[in-house]
Amino acid sequence: MRKPKQSQKEIWRSFWSSGIFAVGGFIFYLLFEKGYTAVYTDVSEMGIAYLVVSFFLIMFLHETYYYWLHRWIHKPGIYEKVHLTHHDSIITSVWTSFSFHPIESFLQVVFIPVIIIFVPAHIVVVMALLFIMTVSATINHLDIEIYPRNFHKNFIGKWLIGATHHSLHHTEFITNYGLYFTFWDKWMNTESKNFEPVFEKLTAKVDE
Ligand SMILES: [Zn+2]
Ligand SMILES: [Zn+2]
Image 1: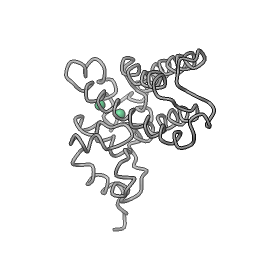
Image 2 (image 1 turned 45 degrees about the vertical axis):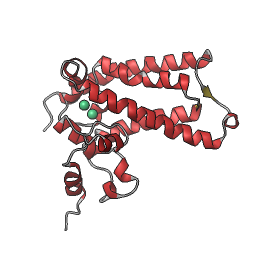
Image 3 (image 1 turned 60 degrees about the vertical axis):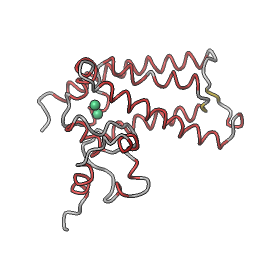
Image 4 (image 1 turned 90 degrees about the horizontal axis):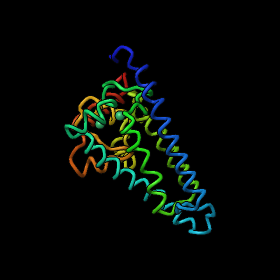
């Protein structure tokens, strides 16, 4: 059961986060315009192979940054100041996706302007990453599992975070810290032991 007025609070917090994300976007634009970034617009400059590699490289770097940032903001003393706002939502909804304290919004958005200074990325790769970031944040906070039965066991699905995985982070607090992928949680043994049974229960066919 969601707390009373939870959605209103989340929408208000998301409003401020959106403002901070927009400032991040503006800074990205200024850096790009002035030629301070490694962003390029001609695919032939680096080739198709690099385009694909750079996409996965930045996803991996983002996952690594977020996982360890997330572990850090769960530390007592930091948690209350920075991350408690997001965890105010124990049962999540789409509105929780961007419901952050302004400091957390800043720590999240800062990754993009910094990474594109150092890692050459085609503009389409940058746009694709921003799109995936937004869509995956929404899927992960749905609190409704959209992946099919046994998805968590298949070659791709076992590495992807979805609604059940991230909902467990909001109810258990000390498990499932990942952003897009499960590998850091698996490597650091922070993946919830309840994930598989809960996922299987939620995706089981009703008539079986
Ligand atoms: Zn957290
Ligand atoms: Zn969350």
